[in-house]
Image (cartoon, rainbow, N blue to C red; front, side):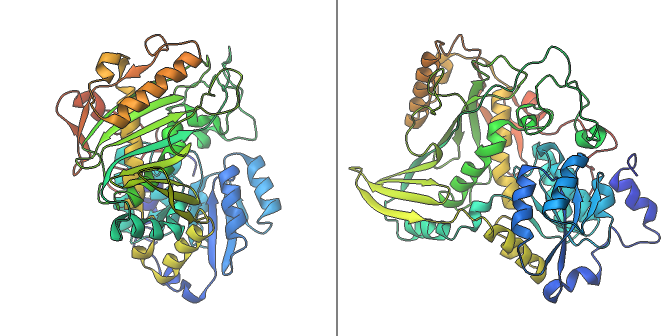
Length: 480
């Protein structure tokens, strides 16, 4: 089984099984039945999901899958003593005693695991970011539609009732007037992941072939296998895909009402600054999105305000959230709360929420029972669009060349100029300049939101990054 792709396995049993067809009547009789859930990944985020699902009525923890046998054992002990344990997700999703799958594995596994699960007739809750590259996100949508599966993406703030209040305030009541521009922030301090002189030795409890899955088999020079995969392009999407997707999803939801799927142009830069470690993704990242209507910028950094500090650099608005600048003031939103101010900075209204935790999982189960994807708060298409902003932002950085302040000032947008100026001050606090900090700045890239392809100048290099090279047999299929 370990050397057989999900697609080939389905073909092999097609003559005797309805595995890849529209799911059996069993899957449609769940309105009064127990939903048996399997988990792909048993690490930190999966543990949070297990804590939620295990307390829900009508839910059984039926399967626990992780290439790290130690994590499976720990999850079984805490959440599912009677659950079946698996190392290979293909074995778990082939189990007819499992109805739905929660995917909380590494980013590079999200889409392939979701596609295989839906081909096997399972409904899917998949963690953010939906995709590791833009093309595979489109394939995941295609699988959800072809197999008539419920597929929820884990941007849980979408299930916070506060979001409806915000949209009513900004768009129906127009309490602050027209929205003119927007800024998004994710400022959170992290540390170096280390730089080994010899490759990391993999714990024998980990089936490394299964852990890698679609990723390339490359030596690892960081100190830890788990979690720090976020900062390696082979397996992760950096802070943009880790936290940026949450705050950008909030922006798309509340500022754009999801009417802007992707930006029309994108311009960005950044770098891995101050740390001499094995990480590849930027710990300083700044991007401008031209949406054709409301201009947007995002600033992300994992550096402290100064060496030795444990505080993030100062920035306008919340350190993890967004600002909608309006004719009559501004709205500042973040997870679980928000506040509106008039032009003089006087508080107009506070908003309070619950971050959507628990409600997002319940929303998924409601859709599974009703067989109605239209009630999902983050249907796979919505999750794909929000993840797309992150995928494109990473490409904007990765196509960059040496930073030039003259090139940066080519964008005449107030919020962008302010953001670049703040990044200059942050570099100065770390005894660097924008020019000598090993920062990159990309070209202005143009996107066709309908085809999700780059067009025009510099598009060839950028389009090559829309799809990754997969490691057989862990390949996202061209036809799902």
